[in-house]
Image 1 (cartoon, one colour):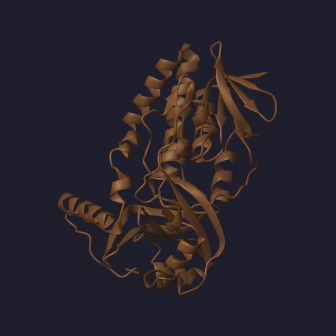
Image 2: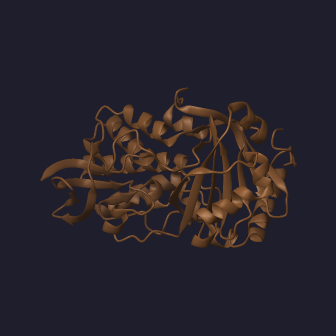
Image 3: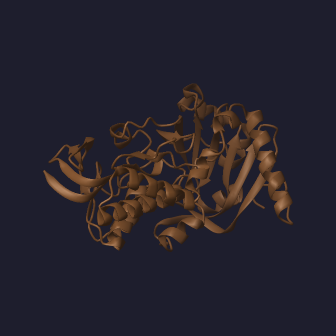
Length: 360
């Protein structure tokens, strides 16, 4: 059996950020991922500007398009604007994830995590290779997490999602979308999106109801008049399915010597599907807690208390505070939520949200 102070399972933004933080803190670790890099990941790929505050500047070769903010479209036909404080960007996840791991001194190890159990002060992880014994295991292995199963933590509500690409020239994308990320609250128990990229739009739907988020549902969304204004009526191609956490972090974000980060820990803003920023932040919190446990000899309760403290200080547990299952239950309830948000924004600032055409 191989021994490492920390084992990180999953090399996406959460796992790569955890590994980077462990390197900074001088804590030995293994980063394990079932795939090599670059690898594909279905994702709208929208990064708010706060992501670069965590990662440093995203290279031009990784950025696809500057993104100005969100347009939120409701079932009644109203559109609300939420502008970023400074431009964000869209990225292709295969290049973005590969960039994150390329900055590590020790590259990820390719292998399949099977399960884990605690034995004599260690977590013994079973893989398709040798077992790995570690003081702390950080599970960053996605929405359907084997690390979460090993910690006996049931995931929250998971949405079904389907996404397609719509090829389009750069200038037309700017003209049709205004370089905004468009979110449509017109789907029961979910939403749809149109994300501008370099030479394509990423168009998708996600819902807690499988019948509202499959390929047929996405076809109906693409055929709708309002989405057609953005896509020019072009059909979708390269359809991909995936899962999105929809209820925020569960009551427990770890157990014993196992911590969950990223999608595995439910760190996604369910109202828009934004997860990359929360994945990076939660991965760093998990690494900081793991490093303290390794250096100070903490047992599970102290490790979990420190992780909770760091998540709370970073505002990450506030993702639990809105019951999005009820908010998104119907397009009408989602619209009421959007109106409340814009009303709060109007009272908190001198500029109120205004209805504008997409290119404004």
